[in-house]
Image (cartoon, rainbow, N blue to C red; front, side, top):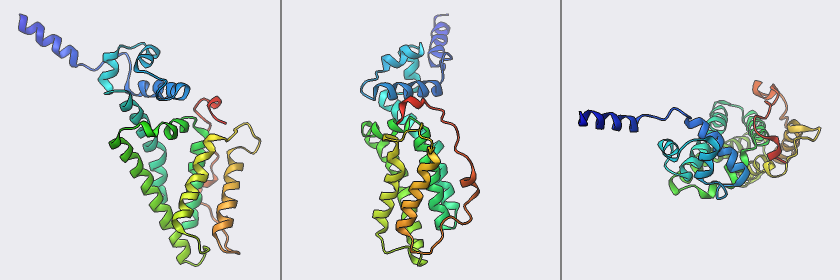
Length: 232
């Protein structure tokens, strides 16, 4: 009888908690990271905000850093990696660049959690940071290859491909620090400005970059699902 009770208790301890979910913890953690920063938020704060116990939290995550990486990884997998996959499938290099500019700029400007994904990255563990950097290294490689194709086709000025690729990433990444979504121009106005600067500087005179955009460029940006007060 005693062995039966011990086995039942052990089974109960191994059973996944039902009061919350991994996704709920991630979303609440992202909200608190936005409000307080990585060091300003504790696992105690998170448990209290969700109304769960620390054992429940640690059922899903090892520690606070593990939570930070999980939200970072989920955002890269849902937003950045699909952009990368579509870029690899787009044969025309100009259309490929336009797709990257449009989709990444919209993602940065329409999602307040971009601030967490950038500002809190230094607090990731070495192996987690390496995973994130690998994703961005792949994007950099695709951009460099795209610029190389433009140069080989005779459409691009004699500009260093690495510097140009880094500059492009910077232009579509850093609006999270200053973009004001209440401006009448909106995200599309910003995208148009970036395209004019990028293509006006990279392409030789007379080369058209507006013709035949992919279907994805004709769609309107989605509504922001994050707290707009956290941006701009």
